[in-house]
Image (cartoon, rainbow, N blue to C red; front, top):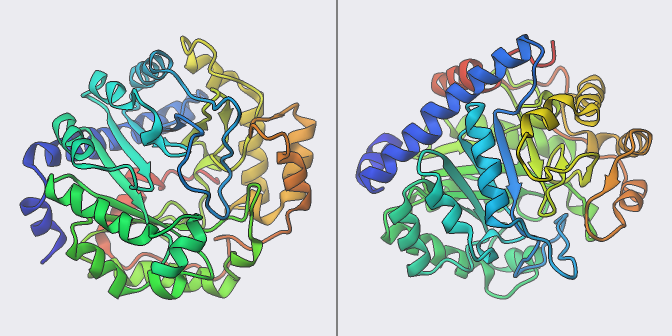
Length: 395
């Protein structure tokens, strides 16, 4: 069954409309407005990723989130103001992260207050119940993006839990029963690339109701970086080659945020299309770079904070000049020197992020000049070129 046929048959039609309009159409308009702002010398991101809490029910390898004591969490009123400010600038899409965001008790109240926005819920799925899925269907403007980090054995090792794989599959089945638009995400590393970067895995997820699959590259960061899991350059190319090939026939959307239509490397934070807000309100370049020079404060003028931030502007300039890939992977020492020189503060909540950067060894990321693999699918090529990454961000 093709992807379009599945989308017409499987999700609730009202949810499908919200997905296409709030996420698809408004997302394209947000990027268009972002490009116009850049040309006018003005800055405000097209998309915003928000970690609403640092609470979590798992302890994953390579995770940068540490639960502080007391835990850090953005209250609903602050979140409400952030979303309102973004909508004023034409940005209606929000990635909701944690920790585990479903541990934030008031989260669905936020979704209910903004039916004209769209929320991608990055979750491990273990807290998804019939009641949770029913509430998401009622709201219509949220899609669960459920992480899968390996097969039965690998999942427990990667996630620091028990029976994680089956519990994740159970969560997908619950979401399918409630006819949600369902996503899955996986961070590809040495221990799972042979199982998850395969057509069999893609088809398995489609058979249980997943509509889009987001592939990440594992980044060895945080208090348990586990650098031996980082992909080598050949494996990064294998992953890119697989993504390009499977897109031409997969019965679902295959998502990445690492390459443009020509296969050239891209960093969303470096080009400024999106930044991250921490559970304490710190404005960070991206989720794993837990350093900031500004905080959202009362969230009444986010535009001023983003447009006048020397720290974010200098970060984007440094990242663009250094690599089109991931600066934290390729040159952690240069990043540490930059952060120190620009007055950035450790926002990790554990006061060890500078030392972690100092101890981190360089790894190759997606930037491999001369080995670009262009998109084969005309649809993905068109979408990336015209709607998302085709705005000449690196000059």
